[in-house]
Length: 190
Image (cartoon, rainbow, N blue to C red; front, side, top):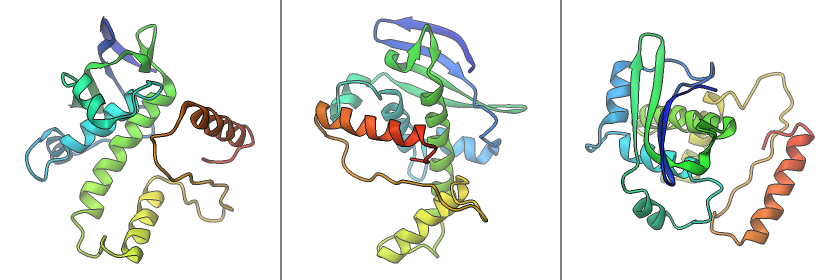
């Protein structure tokens, strides 16, 4: 886990994190699109998804309220000679322990980055995906899962997909978390 120069201010932290070996390098074009807030740029969706990941464990579940609470949150993709790093400004502190990002949150953050780039370039810009139809959506989900190396040839799938809303009671959340934990202990990919 790599966090560089963390700076905590109350319930926010600013730092830089680098991915593990799972994220390939990004092209300059991809980085530019991730940084662009203009139409067609991926920054707005990446920022919102990143904030959702960093806010996990928080008690607030209202997207609008979270965006208002962390209106000063920013995330920047910095291209380096051997990959990328993310600069986080005013990120929720509950994603960190002793100034270092929790490993599972860090992995999820870079997974979101990978998927936003893939969907932005391979799915949304590709006219062969008709996302208005059920078949088109299923095909897109298949392509996303394949890109994420979830679908491995010659391996029997050991996968459980949970789909649903995120506005649930604490009791329901605790139950769901326990079920997911128990499946994970048994080697099931959730």
